Image (tube, rainbow, N blue to C red; front, side, top):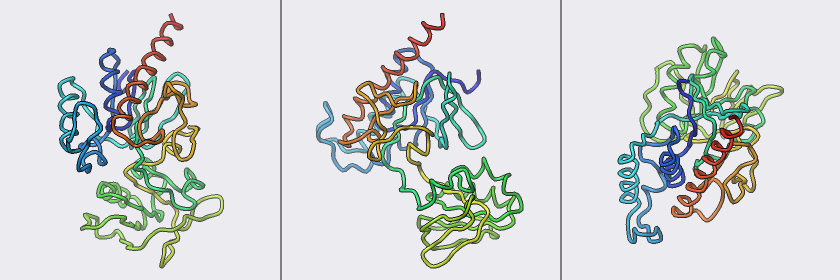
Length: 290
C-alpha cells in the first residue's frame, strides 16, 4: 500500500537517527520525519566531550558525521511535520496536512523543543483549536480565523487559509519580515489565553482580544500527549519501560522526550533499544498471524 510502512520514526536527532539505522539494518521498511539540519539542539552545541569516539567535537561536526552515516545507508529524511498520530488497532495513521501515512509501528523521538501550550489550548483542541491550518481550513469558509505562527513556514499556511476566510488575523511569534497577503491583519501582541464556551471563540492577548471562529496554533512541534492521543505522560515526559515501550501497543519512544539526562549518547542508546523493541514487536506479530 502506498504510504504504508513497517516503522515510522518521528524526529531526526540522535535517538531518531539511531532508531532508523537499526531498523534499516534489520530490513524494515521505514520512514523518518525530521529537519534539514537534523537537530536544532545539536547544531548549536559548541563542544561535545562525552560522545564515545568523538572527543572535543562541535555539535555541527557531529551532525555532519550523522548525516554522512545515514547518507551512506540510503536513509532519507522526510521534511514534513506530523500533526497527529492515531492508533488504529493494527496500524498507526500519521497525519501530515492533507496527506496520511500508515505504519505498523511508531517510534517517537521528538525531543523536548515543543512550546508550552497556551491556557485553554488543550481544553479546546478539536473544538475551535487546531494544529493544521491546511487540513481544517475548509471548515472555516467565510468565517473569521486567527493563526498563531511560531515560524516562517506558518506564513504559507496563512496565505492558503486566507483564500477561504472572511477575515484572517496572523500573530507572529518570531521576528523578521513577513511574506503574507496584504489582506491578512498582522497583530504584534502576545497571546495569553484561548477562551470560549463549548467551542473556542476568543483569543486573549496582552493588550487586546480577538473574537474569532477558529484558532490555529502552528508550532515547530507539539507535546507528545497532543501529538498522540491517549499517550501516557510522566512529569512532562513520555512514560516508557526499559524496552522503550509506551502504554500504546506498537508505539515506542526514545531520547529527550522520555526524560533526563538530556545527553546525545543517552538518546542514541535509547534509539537503538526502541528500534530493537519495535522490530521484535513486528516479528512477533507476523509469527502470530501465520
